[in-house]
Image (cartoon, rainbow, N blue to C red; front, side, top):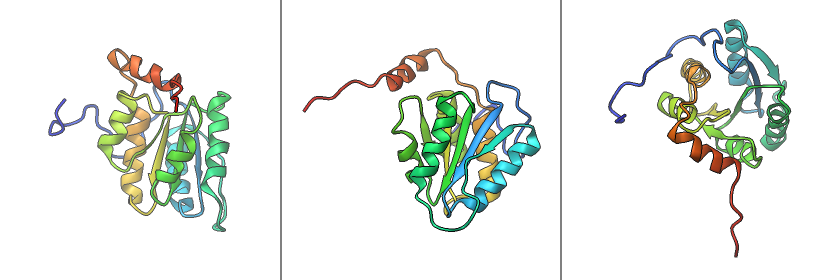
Length: 170
């Protein structure tokens, strides 16, 4: 697929009803992402997803790393199928979540990345930037992320390598 071709299937509106493997979604944010996380959690609930909110619930400052760990714990213990993390840019949450072996977190601030992160990389955590993405676009991004299945096939070998990284010597 060339970048100029449309992405199929497209979900550019409300979050669709869960039909695939993702049914339980964990959400979390730091203080900067609280409002956007709350809106995304509500949209997921409205669509019929089971949502587990790991915080925050207040606007006081918090380290994003702590929230990312709480969400990762749910995913690695099979208490959630996918995660949504929100901070200022999505980058901090992505770095924090990717420290753990079973996690494939990606900063998704556009529809194109959301689609390919799922279809080619089997990403299981979407990290969004509250300072970068408008709420309406964030809902469309999460809709695309949750509705896109992993293609497997030639991509499976690469995903397997992510799950078993080599040790790099000095």
